[in-house]
Length: 205
Image 1 (cartoon, rainbow, N blue to C red):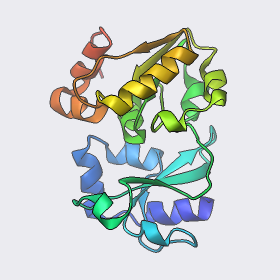
Image 2: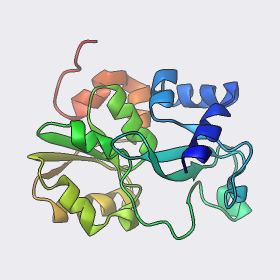
Image 3: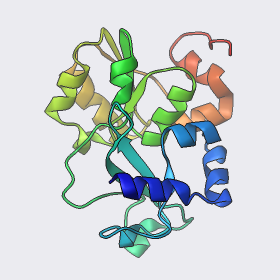
Image 4: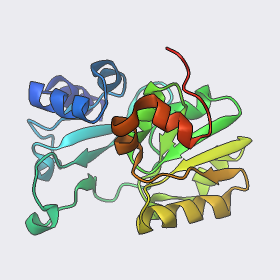
């Protein structure tokens, strides 16, 4: 997994870097989170050719698995694939578990991996669970020690399902009310909009 992650990270093109910048993700954040692109697929990754590679890193920065996001502007279902895809037979995982080891009393849970990257850029310790079906019992145990777990799910039915699962599992969980996903909220209003959703003022850089 390390070899694939390193190769995909090295293959980032200016177009992919621009795509990430357009989503509010700086070059530094892309490098820190080891984001890449599948230009020369490793065995078993052929169907992810051209996809964004999002490695799930352990607390020491080593990749445990990779999820993939289609970068094409088309209806993915028409081509018989999802916008996001997981390696076959991989177990449900939490993205960004290093944040658990760095956080203090609170942790932030997003629905999308790139949303978690955005929150971390703003100094919030964030992980991601990409959908209710990816929430596992062990994730509750991983977050049980925090006094407050903020849930940043998308404002749609799938997001409501994820929020319901987490808030049922953790008494410390509190939904963050959003009118758009984290990335769109950040792009529209910057750090002020994100911290306003928490009822706080943005921290000065």
